[in-house]
Image (cartoon, rainbow, N blue to C red):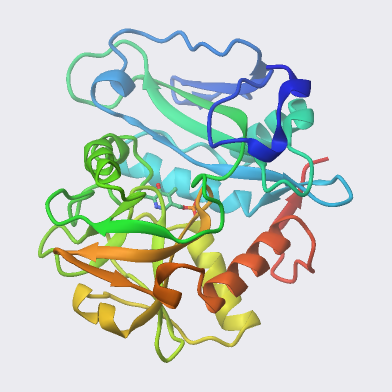
Length: 342
Ligand SMILES: *Cc1c(COP(=O)(O)O)cnc(C)c1O
């Protein structure tokens, strides 16, 4: 990829090959120290569990540039810990936090020119992953593993940018079973979501909102983002469920809402029958950042939120501005969430 040919302003959320990636293998109970490699192909056994049984997990993070040209990561240790949670659930060896952070930092440093300049809303997306390798046939944990991190410069996940999207509450398909693997970032959750989201897009929706798999009465989350609601009394509510992926972005905006803005924050089961009390809705995640949801179809009935779904709601916008300014170092990082890559 030629850096000069990149139009930072019109970047989509897609893969663009950067020069370096980080690889560390696990064998016989030991992690190697890991190294940077240039080859964007991975050679693994045809019988690897990652390929047959989905024994793999991943993370998504961003490196962003400040107005003075510094490069910041946002709460990278939280991603490292979550990857350990995913590994334990899928019977893979945990990547030690220091190896995870070393991989992240080395790969960003090696590809530093690919961190987009300040002011375009673009970032360097990081994709850490852990995959089961080594020869194996039966359904059992792999004998070997690979921890890899690659990067790609990206623009916004929703091409519209900070504009309200239309979503559909999914009334048939489920994302995750109540005691399944919805709470970890395992690839299988995302292949299961490709069909429902493709159908929803054909119907003109940007995303689907999954409901709880047991009763289809409570909101859970989107395919790759959590959801939050601002009620008529200004309370911030976000669903509590064991089947949703605990978003670092969500945890951060809950803290911003509560501590920086004095907003009442609730994490509790949130039923579709409460939708009439809602005035703003948003999706949140590393890729989605905060994306306002203007309209939602629930069982054949369309609900529109702030300004008939035409513009982002004021609280959603306030949270978005605060989070995005904080992430690029425009405002004081009083939560101590930024790590500079030097
Ligand atoms: C990655 C992801 C999120 C967002 O998590 P962040 O830590 O904020 O990036 C939310 N939901 C799902 C299903 C995800 O995969």
